[in-house]
Length: 196
Image 1 (cartoon, helix red, strand yellow):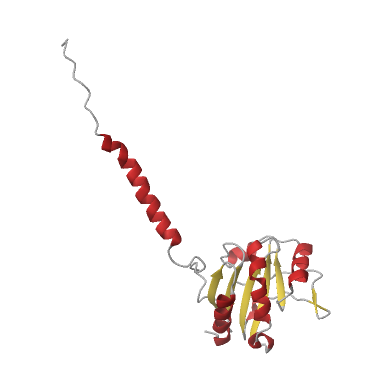
Image 2 (cartoon, helix red, strand yellow):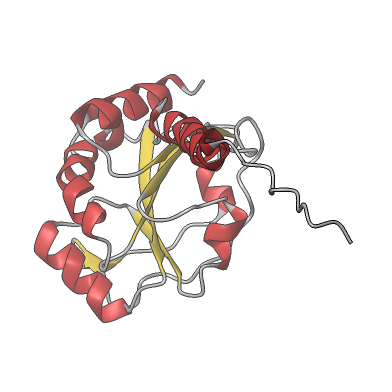
């Protein structure tokens, strides 16, 4: 046995920085992807395709002008452009966007019947949804209740609120994720009124 032992090779202190540098670079890539672009423009495979067929019950006990507010089916969405808004009473951003939906309901295009504004009540209690619409106003001509959330899945909904523009031919023209503001509501109304 040799009395001389070889000293272990010294590692450069820079080697310890490599994982930190790699982590930092990866974090920058993710941050750039997260903050670039408009988060409300989430791509949808349904754009340009027929809106998924749904059959939802109406919101029980909700009335408008003394009449029960009906539900809607896909056949109801054909023949005129429709704005479909997915909402819930428990959704804070839904409260933020609600005045803009009420303003949409008062627009000439909706009042004259060229554009329909309908709602899909998502995973909500009927009593809470009625209270929500009673307090803030009901802008919808029809409301379908998606208690289990299955219809929303078929529509590719990520969360509430989301709004779709469906053309007169029943095809989805546009999808907006998140609460509407005046500019977005106006843009969606113009898109719906043009039917393209």
